[in-house]
Amino acid sequence: MSTSEPTTSPARNHALAEALAWISKFAHAWKAIEPAPHSLSIDGFIIWGPVLYEKHRDEDPVELAARLYGRSGEYSRYLYPGRPPKTGDALPTFGPKV
Image (tube, rainbow, N blue to C red):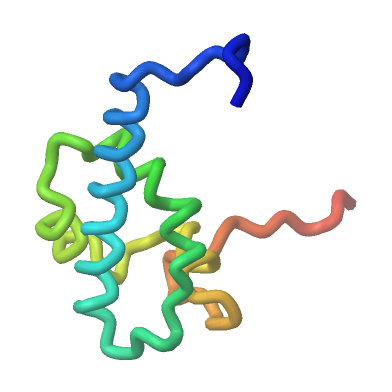
């Protein structure tokens, strides 16, 4: 790194580390509950995790995972790629205009 490049402030790094730790705890708790963990894609948490963190950052991620388990909504397609969506998890579909 050159001396002319700006450095990231420690506060920003701390905030990022805090968010990643929270998301990791949530993902590990979800995986521990999942009866078929081999079907779970960690990539889904890369997409869903920041959304959850923004909304629930003040909550315990392990308790939140237990409360939300089975209700991933539109994010189920990322968490369980290749698995057909459960009723209520499917994204709305729009037919051709007539």
